[in-house]
Image (cartoon, rainbow, N blue to C red; front, side, top):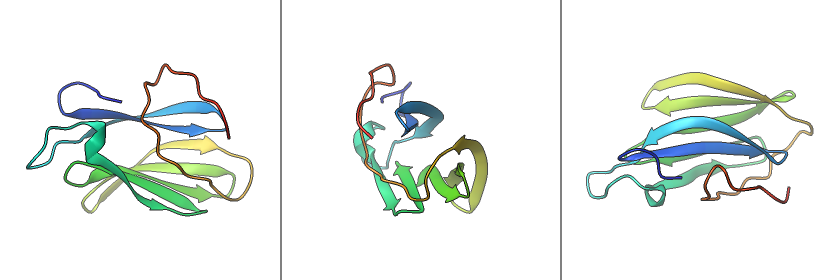
Length: 106
């Protein structure tokens, strides 16, 4: 969802629960920062990543019974959150919706 200025607010929905991760600088050298300048960089049964703007983003990796989420910018990778999960695979899809909207489906 659109945040302040060129920021995009990012959340992961796990088991129907929204988990806000934080804001990413989504501006590029050619466009202002909006959700349209963000994309899934990876989506597999063990992890996913979203990248915004010129390369900062969040990566989420399934480690045991937790989804380990890290902020990634260049070579920098900082863990920001661990989310308990059940199961051993992920189903990934990108949604653009306000964080106060109800979530339905798996």
